[in-house]
Image 1 (tube, helix red, strand yellow):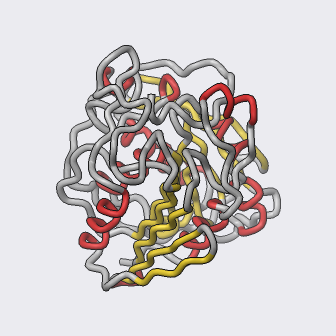
Image 2: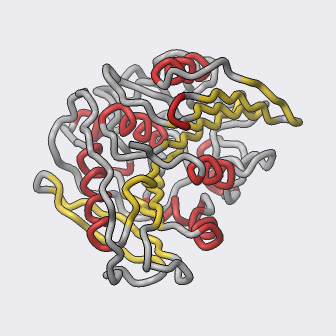
Length: 324
């Protein structure tokens, strides 16, 4: 299954349940001033759970030991790919080390049955099980913000493959996030009235799971079968073009350095829409930790080293707080 092609951690699958997501206009959530508080979360990594629509949902949280809690701090929500989980994402993509260097908190939520629901046909068993992952992520952010002094103007979502698809769904259905960062993912399902948001998208032209040109990936089964997957919606450049329209951006500028091509458009209110393309790169997190056994099992290439996606996405996030 398409997005079920991401680095795997061999842990137990998560339980199932919850309400059916329905595409709606974004939930408006105005930024409010945050009063610094004594943190109730220990430094380092910790396990947490909340109940959403009667179902226990779990996530990991990383708070750098050297991060001052005397003032509001940014939060990055890292969304694993299908067949992954929060622990795998924490180990594979380098966000804890980035948080130590740059000063922010990272949340690693777990999808039920190791997948995220982003449309009626994607992805995995939960897609036909009435799971509302948007509600889970929104409630998780609120829970973390109640425990730590999170700056509501600097909350970001990033993800790979199925997780990147959920990042787009969050941009479509909420205004919780100042920016999203997508790696090897696509926007699926309806997105009728999204609010403007800064977007950075990283994709390899050799991706055969979520193809750059919009063709069907090798795990696509048209939303049928035991593990339903249906990935459509046009090419990656076409989708990025739609977000430039949503954000009312100016004409994009292109630069190429070796295997990496960046197309950047500046938009009103300090927003940007950026597409980073890596020539020949496959369905992986560029600069991520190689996992040869998993790559061989799933038929994946090793991560491209032409770019460190974590560094690039954080650099983008750090210069794009939410305004207004």
